[in-house]
Image (tube, rainbow, N blue to C red; front, side, top):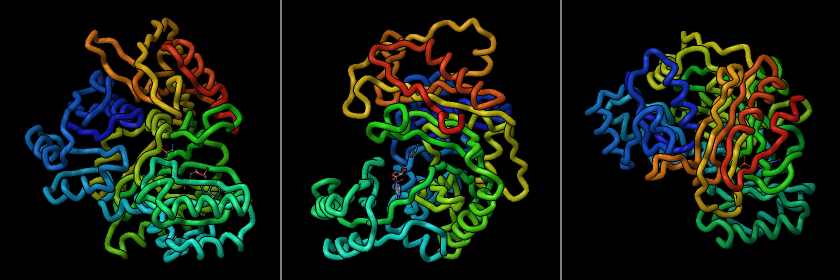
Length: 422
Ligand code: AMP
Ligand code: GLY
């Protein structure tokens, strides 16, 4: 089959790599793709949803996979489904699970899914009152999408009140902050759990752990993610069982009963507090960089997983994973995450080591192809070096061996990805 992937990041590149290995897949298209996805397939300069659907019809594309949240929230799935085209992702209505924190929090409360104590409000007075009932640190979040930057972890009551005031006055996040969520701080460790859903049934993927801070030892500012690994030993059968029974099943049933069955990736941001999984947030797409580590662990054909989910046929699907580990190290540009950096040519050494060639690869993200045909680092997160192995240690060593073969001016990366598991 021919497949279209919507998006431009390392996440979409890694989905493309998994599809490239899949015998059932003929041609792969990316819209828009990046400077390296043209090696896996063809990049399209189309962004209008109806024009994309026209392309899909004209080019016998049997499956479209949506990577990022923005087109989902904007309703790409609704446009495709109206035209009877198979597309993997939730409808605009269902995508509110990510698009609006308040929608998500109220949904979790309606369906008794465990989450931090919270209020949503547009009143500063109510925010102050609730803040006074909590112990510091206190979490203040803007509603709406603000690129993962709408969360303040305030270390004192005063700081929490100040953050609430700034968000509500529209000073910090514009319209995304006209309503806010104030919630209790959860003290535990964080996991990324992904369930592939077809509206009723689901497949849980190997759980990952992301590294959101810029610097080693989880210091420095928050980023989109500086590396991840999977599966993480910080989860066990008991936590998986609790997640299935208390979180995923009530969510799928709840979404269905409220008339917006959930299809696509349910990305569950979990905080494990004293052995209990508590939901921090939902996203309605793969995590980036988590996707880059999970895709190489998928043993079943990727097209089968995504096509069955998109068409409501996961029930009897046997989706298998390799009994291996993957570690992904993000290589970012010099000034990430503060500002953009001038383009820098990327050079990857010829790798003559068979072991490395067979067990490590690059997922390209913020890269562009120059007129000279060379690849340039042009984005904040430039690429992810992924190592696969029989242990986390082995996967980590391979990932960092590959990092050593990649060169561009100003490259930066963490040197401790997966440390929590070692
Ligand atoms: P969010 O966008 O809601 O996922 O928040 C971004 C990050 O802030 C999360 O990945 C957590 O690391 C942290 N965070 C958010 N809410 C809480 C909370 N209630 N307790 C502790 N940490 C939190
Ligand atoms: N890596 C976290 C995210 O994609 O939101």
